[in-house]
Length: 271
Image 1: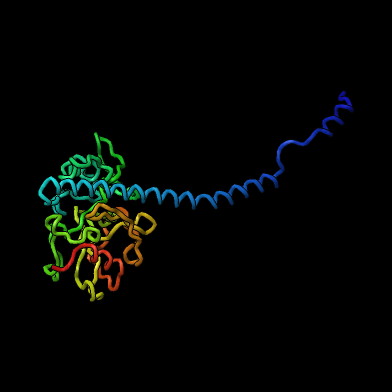
Image 2: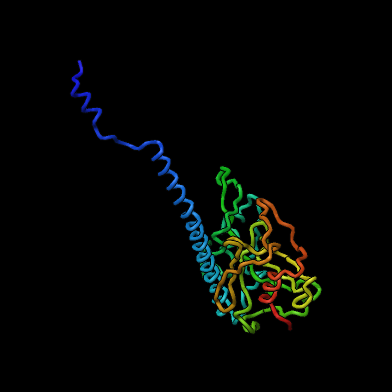
């Protein structure tokens, strides 16, 4: 027989735990806080990637400058600084820095494969390594201004200066050396900028290669004077959706595109 006193004691005991309504209120508060914090965390991550991207540009451009200083101002030009390519195949040049990157004339001045790729570039390839197929990150997004010794482009190319040594560059702050090229555009080691129609015939402007936009629609650039910056693209034609695992059509007309003007203005000058 259970003692009545015992029953009264249990009935009068303080209640423990939460009701369902209280739990739902707590969950709702957590969801609201998460909704407020996650965008801030995402922006912080993007900003950190942008800072690392600019650091990579500065390091690799410093290597380019040091090479020129050791070679009587003759720099490693855009067709010689890196002879390899990048694509979506499982070939070792896509994931092994020893194939091309470590053979670059700039390698002795930096010796870091990480600086050749933007941290925002998440492109990968499937490759067979030691008999096992695995997913590996591609190793490069960097490309060099084709007007740095690489060769002219287009019918009006002979009107513009092809730089062959650092002393040829009259305004170092307005001549870019390297940029990050987007994953579905990057291939060889140089980035073509057409000077067709520049500066006053905007109906002739075109995008030959596409710059990257991994940092909230911005891409990294470095300049002859050693500084780096992120360019925020303003025309949506400069940042079409990325074609994962394939190549976007190149050499596309882009009339009145202010981003094309910006790149042309910093690629070369009239002779």
